[in-house]
Image 1: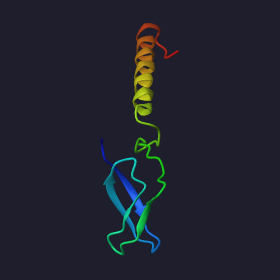
Image 2: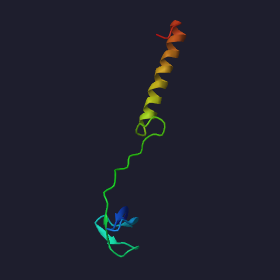
Image 3: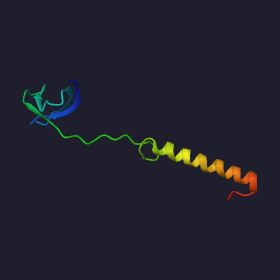
Image 4: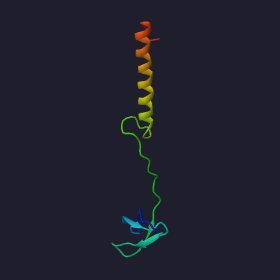
Length: 83
C-alpha cells in the first residue's frame, strides 16, 4: 500500500508531517509522546502562475488567439482589411 504525506497535531500543539498509509489516523508525537491526530488539509490545486487559471487554460487561449491572428492575416492579404 502506498504512503502519503499527512500533517499531525498533538494536544500540546506540536505539528509534524510524516509519510503514512492513508488508513492511519493518529501517531505518537516524537516531541512529547502523546497521540497526534491527523489534521484536515486544504486541497491542493495547481494554477498557472501568471493568470491564475488552471494549467492548460492559458495554452488553450494561446491556441485560439494564434488561430484568430492567422485568420486575420489571411483576410488582410486577401481583402486588404482585417475583417
